[in-house]
Length: 504
Image 1 (cartoon, rainbow, N blue to C red):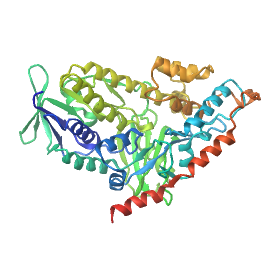
Image 2: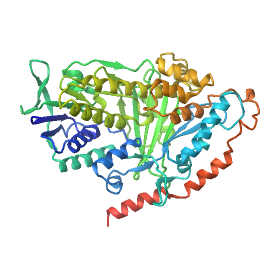
Image 3: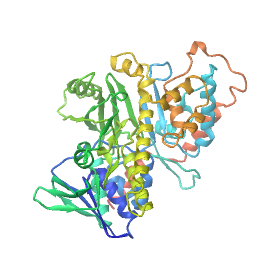
Image 4: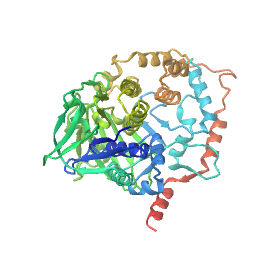
């Protein structure tokens, strides 16, 4: 292949993740990678949670937890606790765990019980009794077990996104990625419509063969320059703004994200080692920025505080082509699904990986462009459906926001069939396999969501079960989970050990 130049517009977490992955993957190729970013332009910087895939990204780059976690004030994440999304008795909260190998023993009991309870048999159907990650989060333990523990554990992280971007920028320099601090004022195109070069404020041209658009919501290259259209998700995802306020860290550092339903949306609470990140995601159709800030401040006990709030507008949806001409959008420039399940970095990682594979499999041409676009579009749609389900099955009646979400019939056929399968008492795992969507959210996640909301027949309708219905002894399951949990380390002590080793 001939020498190629890849130009990435925009740093931030997305830009530097892309630079590192491509530089590492193509270290033996004649490919020059340059990141162009302006130090005078800030980043959104609120994506402070990850899914387990992020560990694979760091492992691939060879960055140990002991190196990067203290540098980014990071903590471990066992999963997400959803609070007040349901008003069903006994189901006011539930935990969405990251799966672990020991769950191979307990998850079948949960699947069985949730299936039987949907048949109106009175068995335990709440997900919180069946998963190791839930138990670890309840005890504020890390997901790190003793070396002798023989099972694999999946987990995510919480981190300061600004510090993470800086760390990845330093790592990219080790991979010989070039860095230009400049503001882009214009874009020059070839006659065939491909992008030829970025023009900086001092008139310098940064030419390239491939351009990666990490310019955020403005999508300067893909949407603005190339005119690629945008598919809004506003008909079934109402939230379009957020307000962010940090608070001091508590004595206990939790190993979970908390998502609390509010009047016009929900608030996140993300524990870092030096602070708690708090934000309220809401819909401007139902309340304004001042109302949202006041509600969040009241919840945090900060009504009279001088702590400054930051307001963010969100553009929810995806571009109609993630790769157009010689430009690939990554991060906010390609789309955004609200941060309810912390999927932002997951999508960045999957997009970069897809581009790397598609590009090199087509001998570094655009021969697999349609394949890339199809894969990313399907991923966005599948993630959107899972997020929409959180709102569609809610049982709150306190505001029109929640009532309108519960009555919203702008559902994809896929989501409609998933919900119908559940309420009809049929096998949900089979339906997910039939649709080929389990690769995006596994059956465990869908079961935890729908069971966690208490989407079951009413208590008065439940009948006593026979021996077959009650074949799974909950006490035995709980005892197994508790015994597994004894192998795991204290969360705060684990983090303090990292910091102590860094400062030796």
